[in-house]
Image 1 (cartoon, rainbow, N blue to C red):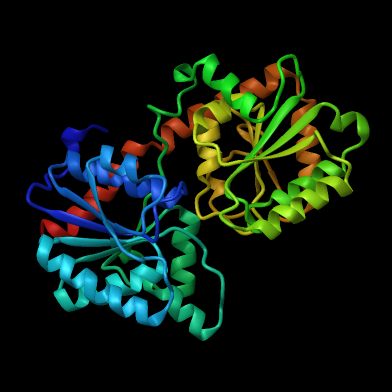
Image 2 (spheres, helix red, strand yellow):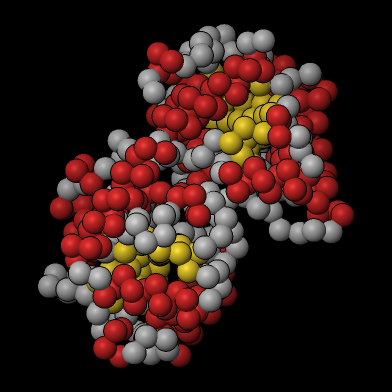
Length: 390
């Protein structure tokens, strides 16, 4: 795919709406689409509370409009509706693309009132099956077109919201192969990451890395318990790194620290905080772990790790079934099972280095064929064009 194949969005202004610009998958996709909209000749606006990715958004050609877009307060949602209506009028917005529920309600009502095409991306399997919760979640299925980020997500949207299949477009998240390329990560970057993680030169233990914000459903607690189930000799061969921002969840961090002490895993499991250089973080790993206890709608960690030619261990549900081929690019554990995750850790740690490397290379080939950033950008621009260029 190349930019010459993209639709011409000259004169079009696309407004993306997302709570904040932290380092999550939806936020990074927002930046990637700002880049594509600008390259296709359009103007890329983003309504958000801002965050770490503000500079990346600006570099991509996007323009940030600060708003308290994360609030679930009904009064704030109504206020934001009026603000988005004003933005649509003042900035001559051609299309609104919502990526999260609370701001999506504001965007949805504003789009209806201003007769602006409305697109949603269903980024996750939202919890809650009560009538009120299902109604709250349903806004993500109310787009004129609904983007699902995996086949699993598309099936979930049809089941939960009875959305007609012709309204759903499945577009997997994409990996930026310009950034996630082993050849482009210097030894100095890898050593800097290891230094941040307090991994000393000469430490020959296998490094298992679990990237992701510190929240219970990402599976850090499960991974600590799985490490605790290994015998002493097995533990001595592995260093598990939990790399992610706690985003204020101090109680969860305390819970993890208590588990590490309980299992006598001091020096074996490390909580290292946010890591900004993820390509180098993956290169510092021998194995990447993503044992989410709730289904990942897509599973960007597994795709990025595979792009860096690293074998992965994931939970066997959700979109990760589409990104990891069992026994070829990694392995999948029964969701929420300590014993299953322990078995996967044991299996990959016992593989010969050549076998782990071959598994990583197979994952790299698979991801490069199916999950590129360019494919995501092209397909999403074509969704916009279906509504804008009728």
